[in-house]
Image 1 (cartoon, rainbow, N blue to C red):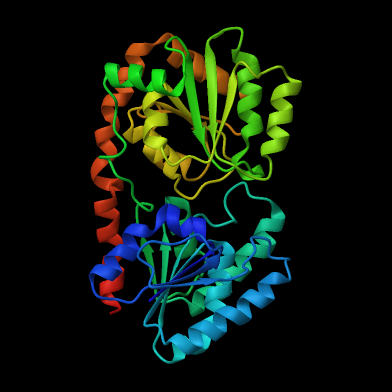
Image 2 (image 1 turned 180 degrees about the horizontal axis):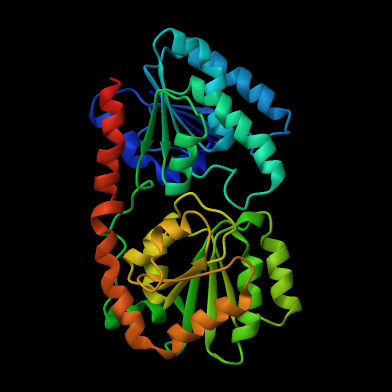
Length: 368
């Protein structure tokens, strides 16, 4: 079987348990994506020049390479991910489908959604609607996308709902007071700091600018506030210059790409998300599992996870004042933070990797 995505880091970040499941069932597993980073559990790996931009000419070359690979390998199942990875793989697999290959596409968040730009609707909606006819199973992971696919005259063989990609509630769990103290000492974070954490790629969609505006408003009311930004991306240099320009260096720390997020969440006090759009955000699932209250923008995906007043609070996109007010509320109310932490178990059964694996493998088993 073949897993494909725009970039190989997407496969490594979210889909290794599924590659392992196929290997454990005796399947030969291939991966096609942009990048040469090794993928565990992959028997064969293809570095394909897929680009995120639909306007890149490299995508024509990627389409030809994908078609050559798919036509020559004789896959029984292809599971494609990410917008451009999904578009190019389904186009490349049309002839193979006529010979019996089953194509599964997971929408990690349609680029057309309530509040999306007109250009997104004009480009992505008709393309996804047309490609649904070349899709045996369309997998969605939030309520808005699921309803949109059902009511938008999409015509895949099956529209299936799963609860994200799943996380480990054993890896991400609330620390004891002593564990939190030790982690802060180990990572050089002051015991008196009120720590906010946002783990996200530094791109326009993740909208870190809103958090910097929020910190600007909070630094006098919470002089010990510290925002940790985990992740890299093309806007990293811009954000660093903005922090310097606003004199926020004492309050904002750039962590870069991390593989120890269970420790970072464990030493924090509140998780934040300023995203403009989401599918079903893993960072929020991990934060809730770690016992953190969440303050996030009221957008698709975030709404699916953050029950207002249950796991934290939702604020309108762009409203730095409301963002600051909710963080200030949590700062002044440690009892509320403890109550929210105790509610992590409300998500355990639904979003645990074991449950999501079962939800998705039921689709595979039906097509084997």
